[in-house]
Amino acid sequence: MAVREGDPVQTRAGEILSEVFGYESFRGAQQEIIERVAAGGDALVLMPTGGGKSLCYQIPALLGNGITVVVSPLIALMQDQVEALAQAGVGAAALNSSMDLSKRREVWDRLRAGTIKLLYVAPERLLIDGFLDELDAFSPALFAIDEAHCISQWGHDFRPEYQKLGIIRKRFPDVPIIALTATADDPTRKDIVKGLGFTEQDLFVSSFDRPNIRYTVEAKDQPRRQLLRMIRERHAGEAGIIYCRSRKKVDDTAEWLREEGIRAVPYHAGMASQQRTLNQQLFLREEGIVVVATIAFGMGIDKPNVRFVAHLDMPPSPQHYSQESGRAGRDGLPAEAWLCYGWSDVVLAQRRLAESELDPIQRRISHHQIDGMLAYCESSLCRRAILLQFFGEDGVEQCSASTESCDNCTKAPEVIDGMVLAQKALSAVSKTGQRFGKVHVIDVLLGKANTKVTRFGHDRLSVYGIGTELEERGWHSIFRQLASRGMIKIDFEGHGGISMTERSRVLLRGEEDFSFRKDAITRKASRSKKKRKMKIEGLDSMQSSLFERLRQYRLEISRQLEVPPYTIFHDSTLVEMSQMQPQTLDQLAMISGVGQKKLEKWGRGFLEVISSQADAGS
Ligand code: ADP
Ligand code: ZN
Image 1 (cartoon, rainbow, N blue to C red):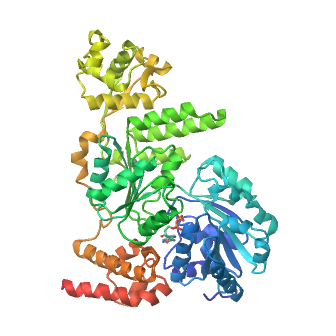
Image 2: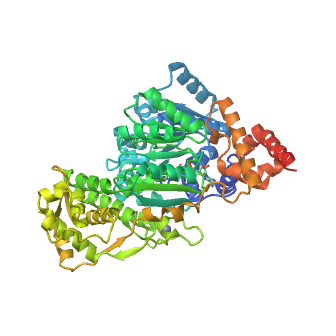
């Protein structure tokens, strides 16, 4: 990289963007952040997953002298990040505990030789006695703290070593620090500012809207079947992540999917670490793998072409949900966030609250989070707007008519006045003595004279058989919606008996409105046909077969080099190649994501694939 004296930073940053990374223009606040950091200022960057945080420190690293030290908790993924930079011709290396001594020596040699611009280190290593002194010899020009929310105890990713990172500032008072995270809530933000000695002026907050992600919630009916249908109809052969709450469910679901012919692998903390690493590698290096995982999987997974993230259990907060679903579609191409949700999730949410022996403030926060998540699931309004509002982004528009990127905007759910139904349900709860579970109360409403109903004499109650206007499934939905709004309480220590709350009495007196959404289950047939194969939308059949061949060719190269395919080119780059069908290296260089080094290394090969397709087609 020729760094010319006297050039304004702005121009040079733009040159690096296009020459090294092959991109035409900066996204969002990238340029502003880069300029600030390059001028010696600090920055706390809050950007959604896929927003483009990496360039915010990678470009400053290439602008100046000295090395940029990147602190990252993700040892397993460091090598891939280094690899991706190497493919773009950038000198980078990692230092962590998984490397043997000779490998580490090699890195120090390269540092002395001055061929490293970016050094990735695990926080443990950075904090080892004497490490910062050794680093001093290479005049660090910038510290980048990735996944900076690990500093905060609020988050679920808290790392004790992260709390000690304030030492960087003390040891190198003049070196700027850039901290980056996709977790945007207020307590976390404050912890980072405090922990690293930032000021409010250092904050760069982007919108967390992810316009390329389509949000869908389905009411649980037969969750596995629903999952399979979603994959087969819209994501056949594509990479995805499925989150489940328990390890056992992870194992079972992965096995079941494999039996159904989906290339699925499990991932959770209870597996042997070797197998876990293997499965993660498979996901990163091969195409079309589906990982079934607990939340242990994912932080920092920067595979750009994850086409769907599915949840078989409701996550505990909108923060979790944003972060996990945000792993879909980092490359900006259409992707899907799918959630299947039902009674068990509501019960678990209530239990979490009841059992939380937190201090009052934390209790309020978790109340707020669980309510937020339930509202997301039950609402008939735009899902995107609900999520963003939770992060304090007001005035969020609903999905635009052209993108229709959530289920509720695509087809508004039917909302019915449910007052009478709710009153019937609550009366049945009350008349049966507030100690029976949902199934029994529904049997009474439907007038089912089974042994349990008759044994308790519930067939003689006035509420017996008053609910025949709904099917069983409809009543399940009503009880779920009542519970999610705190209008009934569930006794989870006993047998799930339902009782009344203060709010149910208000409802019974008719002092509060109550509308229900009709669950989407009954509408599945009409909806499922529409959006299939989202990825190659906009490609005609010739173009999509070219895309497949380019993808295959990329996989061959990446297998040879033993690197993830996306370090060669991203899907979005291959999509553009399929559309533009460049014939010359110059034309190829115009495509987003094709930098100089990559052009030199692979340009000819990809051009050959393109021209052979043209021959075949003519
Ligand atoms: P984050 O770390 O915020 O999740 P990344 O830094 O991995 O996101 O960037 C997400 C994707 O967007 C990457 O594939 C990256 O190469 C791409 N990208 C980043 N900045 C730009 C840009 N200015 N133009 C085009 N693509 C970009
Ligand atoms: Zn919407």
